[in-house]
Image: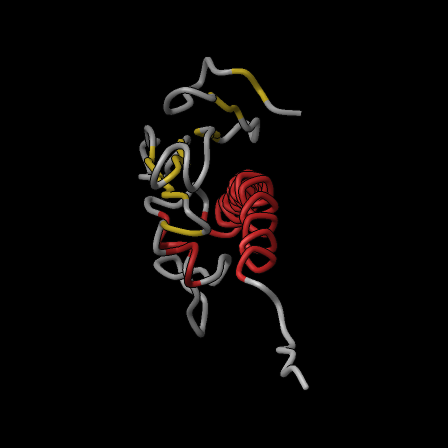
Length: 156
């Protein structure tokens, strides 16, 4: 009587591995694009949060905050830590983007009248593609090739 072996041949296993690699080659770039889109959406949401927090800070304390850290969590809330944004965003880095807050001119009482915020990907093409810009007007602008400025195209 002949001893018949059960199982898959090497050729069959190689074909299965090749099919899995082809599927992965198709899926991974789409996954990376999805992650970049999610990071960009998070950056836009964070800019909206900072704009709202800055307006609330201005209403409460008489001028826009001098730095992003002035919006950070604290108990009780004060003008140096207003508890208006989360601690991660207050560090200036979130979801693959770096946020730079810059205070503008101030009035005779020292109240800041304007600010600008830029959000740029930590690694362009990996963590995000577009750079974003906003200021006290609340309009968020984007640039797909470099850091966005006040003249960049507004997003809708």
